[in-house]
Image 1 (tube, rainbow, N blue to C red):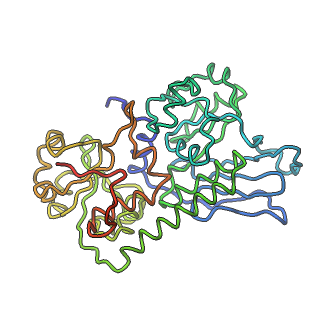
Image 2: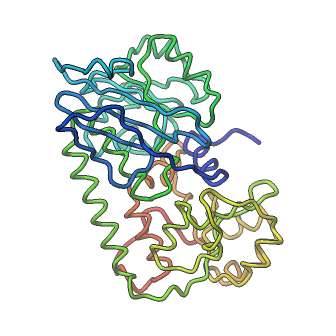
Image 3: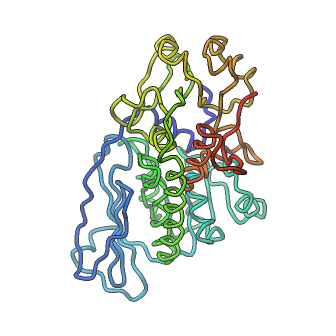
Length: 380
């Protein structure tokens, strides 16, 4: 298959294909004044101490054999000897390279996007604010995720490269470290809770000395999410929902404890595979999906389809679903940035409140009067 996915596309695909294992977070050392600031994220721990923070990243990729601990070291701080075996990172950062479009909103929300000096395949970035920095030459294209330009990174010499892995085989990560570059592995894409994904903004708050700002922003997102959820508290879940579409010869349906299923549950809908236990997804044949979901009255299609005709051209049998016949098919991935990046992939993980409102608008159109979709669009 043509490699057209940018990092987050890959991540989203992996996200639906694999299940996730939640590990217990282990904190090496806590002082008497240490304070944990993470509430929802299962793969991140940040313990704030006087002059330094201990960051733990667990479950960074499916079936991960490693956990990562980093010490964020403030100026003139005293790091306990017991922590000196872990990689230390001087904070606040003055320059950074990130490798996921999902990180761009975090930088912008904290108003540190001008610290970004490099990104792999910059065309995948949709945000107009960061695109202006790219156009100005402030953000360099540093290759592809699976093949970063190490010579260019050495020349840029960022304070930190924040990147990710997709499995236990990560030669690129090893090469970056051997080159003397500071690297931090993150695993936000493995989070199954909508608010857990968004809470990774606190990592960037710690990296840039903006912990209070990150907490303030995240608290507002939590408040907005819960207010939207409250709107449907007493509403019946009447919409029977089909999700996804064929990928090659397989239809991956989201399992009942997945990120996607959680949105549909919180928006009060009757997702047809809500009782399928686990995270990630289950691969089914078209016939299996049609047998169960022919009568679905809402279809949330995956992919960048912009019309029913386009959808039907991809697979003529899609027309057999009632939702197709009744023209109640929606899509979240059709809005693109100026250079082809998918807005949903970039912004949705950091703004789950807006994703939830889109779902509520679809399932309960009488609510959220005047609200316009942020990501979703109805296929005509």
